[in-house]
Length: 288
Image 1 (cartoon, helix red, strand yellow):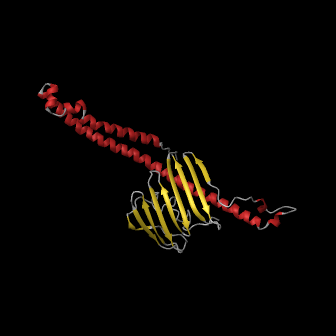
Image 2 (spheres, helix red, strand yellow):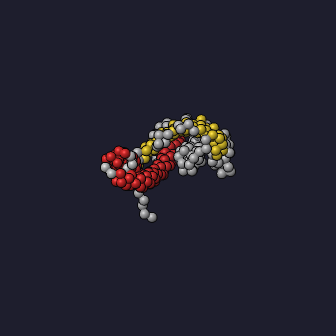
Image 3 (tube, one colour):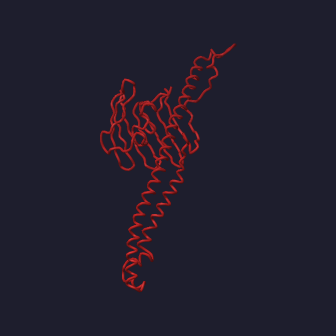
């Protein structure tokens, strides 16, 4: 399959140029010499010096105006199409970046947890590491610290940063993830209280959302999402199934949500809402 590369700058430049061209049409029709001479007014006749010429100019102006107004509409629609395609691909790539960021950060924390468990095991079996002779593999363990180190990785089009805080039992109590991609930035901060949590999210377009989820022991719960645009949406979900996975959230009140499962503002998007199985497991997770 051939590689497809989308240059957002070219698409956005095309949109700007088409919008600019469309913006020049109306002043050309309504203002300036063409607008004055085609108005059919006494001023136009006085300037042209002949009623017949003024009438012909007025007819020409009317026909040209009709054509140019259609061109104005077409240019704006074309500009919107270019911009829509560019933003759609940008958002698609950003979502992939967010997904990779979450996966990489989780693996990073899991790696720390494994090192921490090995270090703790070594501390409780120090006598086994005194020798002489060949020592067990765990004797080479080093202290990884009491908390996971911050995660950072540079990507071809941006960067991914993750900061995780855990309690003394190794359970995640706070996560902060920032994904920068092609000039856009997405940030999500989640604080856990048992299985329940609150999430504050800032999206690439500058909008924000505040999510409060109250989760019961069986995985069922309720959630409210308040947007910076004044929207307020309520969701509920039932208990976990036999496979241990919680069902998707369903709208129960307030403003109806928009967008499909891939929408970063959709509560069932596992990349942007940490309650979903497969990403954070539906509770405040212990990384092991």
